Amino acid sequence: MPGPVSWIIIGIIALLVFGPKKLPEIGKAFGSSLREFKNATKGLVEDDDIKKIEEPKEELK
Image (cartoon, rainbow, N blue to C red; front, side, top):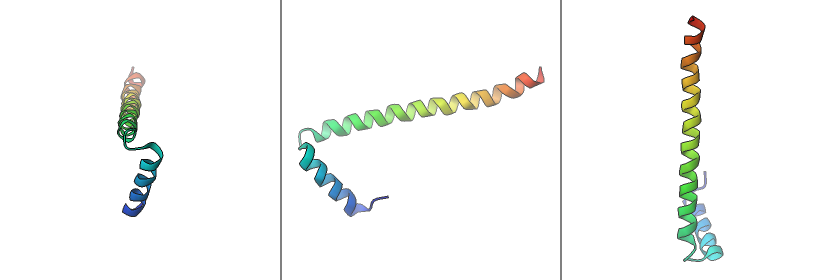
């Protein structure tokens, strides 16, 4: 995991490359993409949990 100095350098480079007007838009897009990915993986885990619960019930029948 990068340390605080690395994050500062990454931030400065991003500011130089994208500019101060584009940076908030990029951050917002990254955050929403991360949220969608997190929700999708949460859904997959929940589906697996449901399958694990239903499998023993089918074996009992």
